[in-house]
Length: 194
Image (cartoon, rainbow, N blue to C red; front, side, top):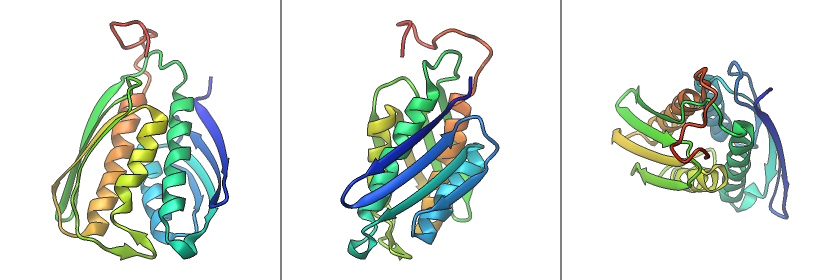
């Protein structure tokens, strides 16, 4: 069975169509109206080996917040849906990723309880309309809709571009590891369900 999902979200602020395949090869077709957001989502897909297609439009004349947050909602729903019953998955993972002067650690649990610990302060910057402070909002939306326990920690770094890109790459790598099928068909929980 293919682990994939298609999510469509239409609001007065945004219109998003997102296709996500967990067991992919890193193929990405992304158009969010924001080049920097396209770049970091492509990095997530490439390094996580996920296939992803996103066509998104939004009221970017008011800033990128609505668009970024709603893509987080859609990606979170797609991750949750594509995981299915979670039989045989690794469940837990972490990844430490260096990028120039930045180093980020991401650890996660696909156990079904939503929680975000975002410990990644960075200078305020605007990259093609994408504000560095929006990264936390993206992951809050994603976690709330994927039911992932996610810890993001900046170990070092001063350049917001490097820090943000390292976060998205490390998240992709950790999600790839945690979602992989181990060959054991059990639910990875003493409760017998996730």
